[in-house]
Image 1 (tube, rainbow, N blue to C red):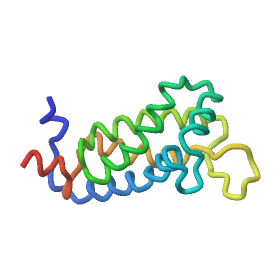
Image 2 (image 1 turned 90 degrees about the horizontal axis):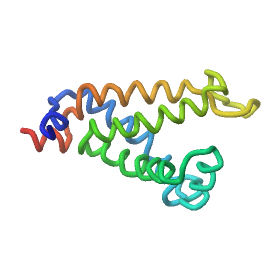
Image 3 (image 1 turned 90 degrees about the vertical axis):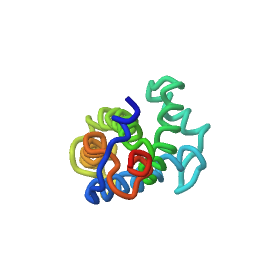
Length: 144
């Protein structure tokens, strides 16, 4: 089964999309884990997530998943698993932001951040889930 999850080909489109998704998600994890990029750190992130009725265990999974899942994507290590976990996390984020509408809140005039960003990111993650990590990945190196 692990071979099936690792299976990929030397496709550079998949590589590009995987790395872009990983780089895009990385700051979210680092904000929650280390207070980097203007983030809150673990304690405040857990508090904010539990205020949104997210169980503490799931909040921990979000923090760990965004932090290490993004690194796994950039490296192409267990890319399908990392993308699958992040797909679940960002589906939850999309559901949370769904009432705020479609277009981003560029000027801060409305409540919330909207969902078109989540739809785009979920699309990138779905490609990695379906096609694998692509070229320049640990997955390809392990299966070659």
